[in-house]
Image (cartoon, rainbow, N blue to C red; front, side):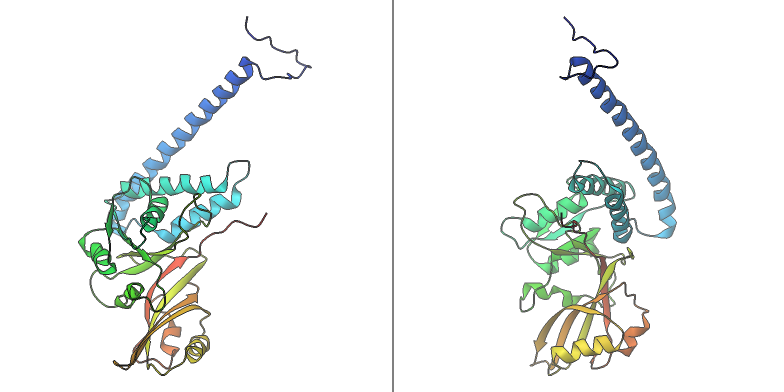
Length: 294
């Protein structure tokens, strides 16, 4: 016998089949609405792709960061923000691929494959990915056609981590730092606590909340304190500072993280003293999002 429907003024005490069917029907209706919006969005992206042929590259990490920040800021309800981030990351990966061939080169120095997993989380599980064991081979993939390359965040004194010293030249295509991974701090359970920089032959675009990376060359006797002072005097707000000294060559190089989005034309660059060569802008990235404490 079918479940009885309670009177209008009598709330049900147990879910009946009629309630389950009604809720399933509501989910189906919402799925249809969501799918219609996705179809409409993809049509707009297709029009954008045709326009992009005249205006530049499809990869816009800064804009992607803006989009996800807006989603996180307005989100409410029981669905976890981590799920929202992953939904939009997959959506952005799919629509970026609509605008042209997109593949990833990964420098994998983690025995457990943590850097490849980090790239998959950000750029989509179906995006073509090639793994290399050396930074040089990974960066070379950009010239060979890869859209982006991901490399471990440099560490001072680590020979593998000194790959950043090859950036900032005038080679074509020039490699730029365009993103820092992970963008969203909460990661799947068991994920390795790694961070990576993303390189692209397309320059970075501002997200509204960014940091930039500068490459500095200076005499090896200069101290870290004096270098920080020179950055501050030029108007920069310095953060991390990695220094590699080659006293035999009479030169030291630093990877300097500074607040804000810095372009090649930034007038503060010419105000930096103590340098043996002009400062090079290596790129910029959107500051990662972290959840507010409960």
